[in-house]
Image (cartoon, rainbow, N blue to C red; front, side):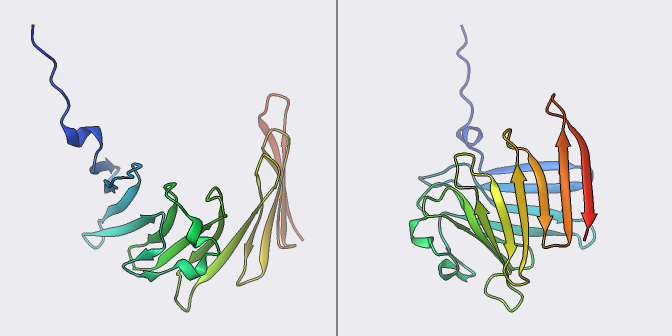
Length: 186
């Protein structure tokens, strides 16, 4: 009786994966270290206009990258741990977005786009302190605009307000289906 062959090691934990869809070609590279969690560390996207790959780099569990040290942007940078949290994402143009987490590394509390540049924008996140931990608000710190959220007991967003400019109310039926969305501008 013939023994089944074992899958090659590279298939057990892929280091690189290709995906093609509707004229796009995306190559994904995964982490492969001792504390590997299967995180995507690099994304290569084919740009059919320029005939080149655009590369996005992701860093996890640390704020020091080849682009610099971003730890000063995050109050809890020293307690990030090794939970597999995305901390820095460098886009194809070389700009970095930094993701900061609470002291338990459980929730993102700040996002800084184009970090350490003149065009940097900071967004702060506040969560409901109850067990649901629903997002209460997102504040664009640089423009002083806050988006607030309210949730029902099922964890569905039922009310959203954006800086005294726009309010959106969502109503659901008893079968937990969205039935009505009302939006206005003040």
